Length: 235
Image (cartoon, rainbow, N blue to C red):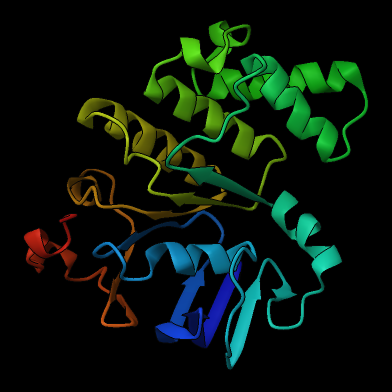
C-alpha cells in the first residue's frame, strides 16, 4: 500500500481541519479528492509530502515511511519518489523547458549528461511536448506549461503523483486533456492522487473518489454521481 492513513487528524495554526481520516492508495490507482474551498483538500495532500505535519494518527504511512516519526533529513528522499504537480505550474521562468528538467534531475542526483538528455526526451515525448524543449515558460500556453509540470513530476519515475487542482487555471478542453494524461500515467502503475473542482471529469475519467466535508474525508466512489454536484463547485 502506497498510502495508509488510519484515524489521522490534521490541524493548522491550532485549528482542526480534518479528523479521523481513513485514506488509502495502492499502485496504479486514480484518486480524486473533491470538496468545497476550505474543506481540507490541499491540507490532506500537503501531509503526503510533509509540507504540513500530521497532528495525530493511529497510522500515517506514505511510500513505506511513518509520517509521524519521519526525520527532516529523510523528507527529500520521500519526495523523490513522489511527483508533485501544482495549479500554478511552478516552473522556473528564467530557463527553457529543457533546463527546467535538467535542474530537477541534477538536484536529485543525476550526473551523466547523456542519461539526463535521454530521460528529458522520454518524458517530453510522453506528455506531447518534445518539440517545445527549447521554449521558455512564458512562450507556452497554460496547458503546455502544465504538461511540462507533469513531465517534471514523472522524471524520476515516481510511485505516486500528487496533483493539487492541476486543471484549475485551464479551459475545459485543455483540462480534459491534462486529466486524460494523468489517467494514462496511472495505467502504467503510478498512483495519481488529485484534488479537483472539475466534477464532470469524474464521469469522463472514472476513479476512486473521496470527498472532504465537515472535517471528514469520505469515500464516495460508489455514489458520487448521486451527489448534488452544485455542492461541490467552487463559490
